[in-house]
Structures are given as structure tokens and as C-alpha cells.
Image 1 (cartoon, rainbow, N blue to C red):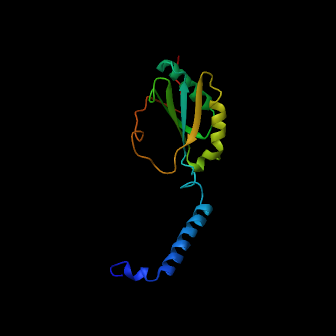
Image 2 (cartoon, one colour; image 1 turned 30 degrees about the horizontal axis):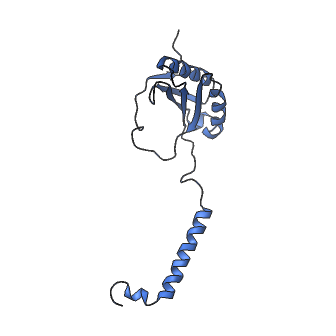
Image 3 (cartoon, helix red, strand yellow; image 1 turned 120 degrees about the vertical axis):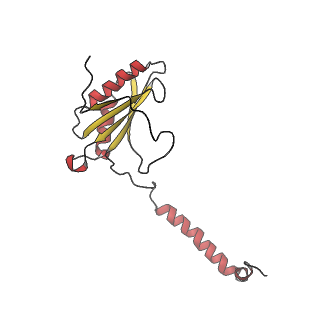
Length: 159
């Protein structure tokens, strides 16, 4: 044979042995690798998603969001909280929980997440979940959004 592949094909058993070695090593690489691309890291930020009844108005959703802020107001590790209602529909919203710097708090996002979930799970009339931000930044339509209102130090509006 001639051309670029002629030389290696003359040694077909050697090429096949290397192909088997490469394919077999793929199994060991897959079996011994972690299930995630990057380990979950403490970025000092968590997200909460709240969903009310399908026919809920934006005012009702805002009431649930205010309950969420009030429920989380006594967690000392949370420095700021911002919330957006009506972003995915009138009956839904999300909140960002900005934590204090690492040197000013004793708990990580991994240890705080179950406590926050237990607390916001008590909101009657809405489903709420909390999760940590992805280790890698994502780009797309959710990369930037308008903030409807923000609670600095959890100062809730007077009624």
C-alpha cells in the first residue's frame, strides 16, 4: 500500500493492539472519574425558586416572596437577599441569597442548604426549593436579569 496509511497498515497487529489498549483505558478512565465535571464549591451564593398556584397573581407571588425573606432573616450567614417575581410567569419567582465572606461565617453553603430548604418548605401555598449555583458560569438568556426589589439586612417594607 502507498499513501499516508500504507506504513501503519503493514503492521496491522500492532495497530490493533494499540486500539484495544486505548479502548480498554477508556473504561478505566470512566469508572474511576468523578460523576461531576467540577466539584461543588462554596461560592457564597445560593438560589431559591418559588412557585405558587398556576392561577396566582403577581401580588400573591410577592406575598410568598416576602414570607421567604422573613423566614430567612435570622440566619446570620446571609448578608443580602434579592428577589424577582414574575420572571418565569406571574406565579413564580426566584431569590438570590448572598452569604457573608468566608472569614465572617462558620457554615458553608453545603451545610446551610438543608436548613434553608427546611425553612422555605414551610411556606403554605407555594413550593420553594434552594440550590447552589453551578461551579461553572453559564451564558445565555438567564445570565442577566432585572432585580425587582432587594432586602438589605432584611429590612422588609412596612405595611
